[in-house]
Length: 110
Image 1 (cartoon, rainbow, N blue to C red):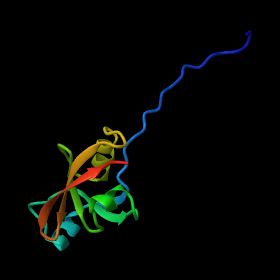
Image 2 (image 1 turned 45 degrees about the vertical axis):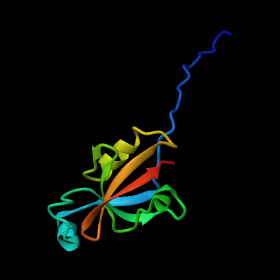
Image 3 (image 1 turned 90 degrees about the vertical axis):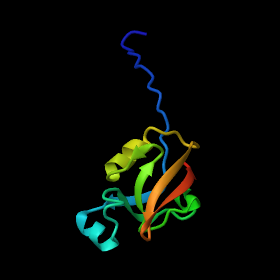
Image 4 (image 1 turned 120 degrees about the vertical axis):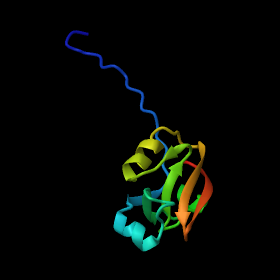
């Protein structure tokens, strides 16, 4: 048809979600939580969606996420970037620091 331009179809790949709110884990927080040197960096969980994937896996407010699968988590940006490499429904181990010790939690991503 004259005047009609076709646009290429872009396939959108769904990205995995965990269902948490996180913030940067600052030096002041590390001192408060007493996590150095075990969890010198990570993403501090400040909220967990009720009945969401993180809640089902056992992630709690106050956990410090330090690893997702084989990737180290140093801050909220690396957590989001790492999640972007997964698809909904994939299973992954998440390592969090809780009450003075690392804890491995198996999770299925949403």
